[in-house]
Amino acid sequence: MSGVPDPLYVRARCALLDAFDALEPHLDAIVLVGAQAVYLHTTDADLAIAPGDLADSPLIGDALTSGGFTPRAHPGGWLSPDGIYLDVMVPDALAGPGTRGARLGAHGKRAARRTKGLEATLVDRERRTVFALDPTDSRAREIWIAGPAALIVAKLHKIGERVGAQDRVRDKDALDLYRLLQAVSTDQLADGMRRLREHPLSRDVTATALVTLRALFTRRDAEGVEMTVRAAGDPENSDVMRASMIGLATDLLAATQE
Amino acid sequence: MTGKKRISETAALRLAEQIVARSLPSGWSAKVLQAPARSAGSRFVFLRIRTSDGDSSEFGIVAKRSLNPMAAGQLLDTMGVQATTSQRGTKPVDLAVIAPYLSERTRELIASRGVSYIDSTGNMRLQSDKPALYILTNGADKDPWPDDQPLKSLRGRGAARALRAIVDFRPPYGVRELAARANVSPATLSRVTDLLARDALLTRDSRGRVNDVDWAGCLRRWSKDYEFATSNQTTAFLAPRGLSDFTSKLATVKWRYALTGSLGAQSFSPIAPARLGMLYVDDIETAARQLDLREVDSGTNVLIAEPFDQVVFERTTKRDGLTLTAPTQIVADLLTGSGRMPAEGEELVAWMKDNERVWRT
Image (cartoon, rainbow over all chains, first blue to last red; front, side, top):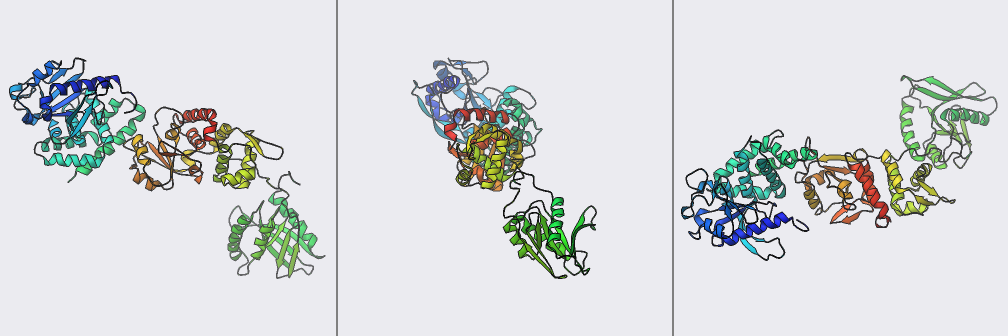
């Protein structure tokens, strides 16, 4: 990024730091997904929680509420005082029984949503410091952020769950995937995928994600490639995008072959 | 005769016949004859010399409208083959080259191979064993028809190199002086200067020094004969991580390159983000490998070129860690490109008009 950041990113970053302030006692159990700070500029803040590392108090719901966040209709959905969405999620494999809300013991089943594919973010992650973008805000937090291979696994699950839905939000996930594949070297991604496949928590979701990658992103007429082109809304460049997506996806699949 | 049109081969043959006839002893005759050749459509041309006794000798003729020493050497190699395969069986045919004018160097070269020659100004060396004949006469020392073939296009590599020199350097300059500065052949530079003067794209003073050049007009004129995609050896590739990744990789390579096209232009004047990377290199294969470029059926975003001439690597600029070919070259490459590139070329021309001090030597 260069020059003055978009005001929306400044607000989003501020909301994210507000959430970290509120959840400070739990920070070691939280991984920032979407990695606003590093790979992409997204305006929504997604947090993955490792239930086993969570302290019993304060309760997540209480902490966020006293931090000014208000709960939205679905479990894990929160809104910052400034109108920024915050999603608190638990990897499906660790979320206990049920279909939507994650069972988090004392924290209840409305504080976080269960999400498949996030298992990878608890395995492929690194410590990073996230700074405020507003020059008058001096806050900085060292937190866990998901690594790029984990982000790709998470994105592929989001995309794979709603194949054929023709919805624009899903299209945007395909474009995020494209940008991740472009920004990170194939070697680095393949390393991450190997680690994810070796870990019991992330083995299955990673295998599923790679199957989705092959099915949806390695042929010109495949649906994922179409989603990417649609999301970019740049017809003049669509042939280059198609060829690039296929090339990078094929490279990654080849590099992850044992 | 200067300023007149060089005479044709046929006229040179007719004159040669007269020149030879005048030099022969009385009672001898010389005649140019044509006979159908074995291959359809072509003819053998002979010069037959008859002595007063009735003996005769024939020279196989090769007539040329002009012949420089290099072309003469190549021609003689070919004629050597013809001599052994002629109708005359095992006996080699005596050969003679006929042209409107043969320079001293060309005449020496022909003679050194044992071949006869006759030019229309009277330079002649005619030799045969049977009947024994040897005639050597001198004609003009200078070509009466110099520069009779004005340059009609800027298509050639030498012409392009000369044109780049004319637009890159700030006049006034003399042709020799510019030829030395830009390492261009003075003869080619002179011919290109003539062409541009005929098109009113440059003016010269009374002594022939170039004192004003319409460089933008010259570049537009060049773009009629030159084309990035065809004048250079080009291959299209996909850079799957996009053009910004392509230029970051480029900034780290050790080999020689020069960026052109939209990516080059945007370093000088602001234009919309580039869609196509255009790059000059010495070796396309090395470049493709080290820049992680792919050959794909459709969806290419990079064109790599082995250039028409080394001039694309001369007078380059370094900006943002990247080597750019000269803006004059970028203009020519854009004007001959597709899509919105010609418009970007005109935008760069506008910038160059306002910033002549920045780019012109």
